[in-house]
Picture 1 (cartoon, rainbow, N blue to C red):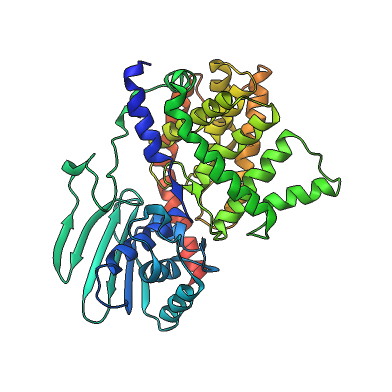
Picture 2: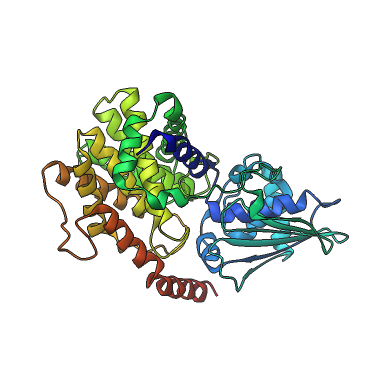
Length: 436
């Protein structure tokens, strides 16, 4: 890969690896509500939300930070009443108990409605807020923070245009094109991770800091299904032994436990997902500590993991029936293999083996049990890395795996973007009927 492209890849990583407080789908609803509410004269009295099917799926059962509640209604209400419209994915960082009390009053008054919109956008949230005098509608689409339009009392006061790309506005930076990723290969990403100037990529250490703090939170308190704490407790009981694998499972899943149950600590996300950020980060962090890697090795492993996760996800829809933690953990697997002394060929074999292992894990919405899928993905990453180091791999004669790793990634993505779209419809239908 030519060094001339390094700056573009660094910009893409900085765009796709950002702090996010809470699950990014309901947070996008909260952000739209906050932006709309800021333009009202009085406190909102009615909120109407329309979302894409995928956003509905990921918002129905996940904890909303600072509220002790789950779902899109509380996300919309707390966003409208207390969200910071300029904070992006950390819109709910300043929520207080008093704000939550007021938000619950809106829900009790049945002043918040949620509907599924008939749209083709994978990510779509249209939020209308009213104070009885004025009415403002904000639409976010295609990424979790991209405002497409603002309508105030029937008058469009903001309309997104592709011409605005690369031009900052008060609503944030519009999305950079990721088309360069489609022209890259795993080798290009490996070369970049190993050769980019350290000063230019050391920002990735923030991923370690944020996700490790979230992990510690998950181990210290009874969040969600307590997957991380369960591993930790059973080491103390003598039912499990400590070591690299157990530590990776405990610390990675603990971060997801805390995040999915509404902890008031941000995750460093990847490709619009906090769990994907956790899955790409924590297995690498734990491995680096275990092998006593240098700071430079740790940074390069994290860059490799996050850019590989972005690269794989760039071939897929932002939201789909394929669990995103699985693809993010493929990035972590690359970082683990590198830290354990693996070559580019062994990294490629590691990713191929993971595709042969966990390609079928579905996404049935964001909720506390996502931490189980995160831990399964992390376990698969370690298993595939150790196999590759011993010269063992899933070959191109097996299933959807090809001998060339980039071909395997495209095969996986074809599955996610093709037949699994119907799986997604079926999953949502089951979930909606279950909650009716």
